[in-house]
Image (cartoon, rainbow, N blue to C red; front, side, top):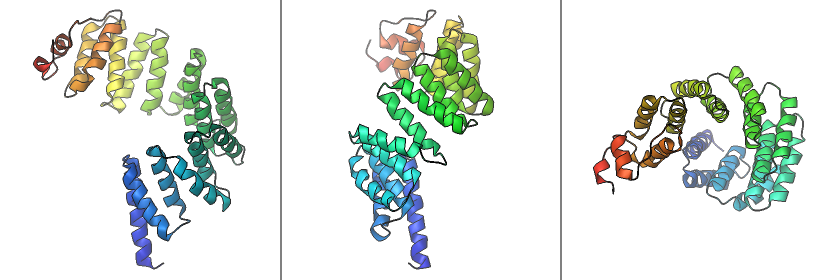
Amino acid sequence: MSKAQNRLQAQALQEAIQALRGRQFARAEQIAASILRTAKTDRAALLVHAHALLGQQRASEAVAPLEKAILRGSDPELETLLGAALCESRRGADGIAQLRKTAARRPPFLPAFQELAGRLAKSAELTEAIKVIEDALALAPDSVDLKLDLGRLCLQANDRARARANLVAAREAAPGRPDILVELAWVQFLDGDYAEAAGTYKHALGLRPEDTQTRANLAMCLMEMGDRAGAEAALRTVVRGRPHLLSRAAYTMVVSSHGRFFFRPSDAAKFLQVEGAAALKP
């Protein structure tokens, strides 16, 4: 292949990756497939192609190319993706077996543990999922992502004390990550530590101010603290320019012990100063 062809192929691959990141799965698949027609063993193009197929709920089409690729040599990333594709193709047992095999490799490939734990959790095998992440943490005790995963799984298992401990450890290791902060804040909220949760949500919003879900959760905390004015101001920010979030905001007010209830959506819209409230049905 000439230098010009290599350059064009590299440009096409970057376009495919950008399309995948933008969730333009059909576009990513099309570009990756065109690369694979002339470079059948291009690993990066194969990864993009398989991810694009999974994104379109066509995982079964990704299985054969991935199986063929891993026959050419050990590749834990491709093997992990194959495990996910098998699970999505209603071949759960085969997928779990593949993921266990990949997780057993050394040096460890941490995404294989994470994918395996996620699949087990989806199958309601939370105890086993937690053990998988614990095993991974024993191999990589400084991994923030694994601590976050363990916190989430413990919360699913309703072990809030352990969830909080792991999420606090993750926050201490990476204080600038909003994903960790919102998980920790939710545990604090469930434990009734509303002021602490509100502070954590505010920290997360300082890092990601456009996160409407986090702002709505902050409003719930403020409501429970008796700060109705602060909560309602937060909810008005949530719905400003986003009238489709009215039901979410109204629900936040209804479920709080210090909230408000509206019989008509138009009344809730008017109270929250939603644009076009007059057009809503009473």
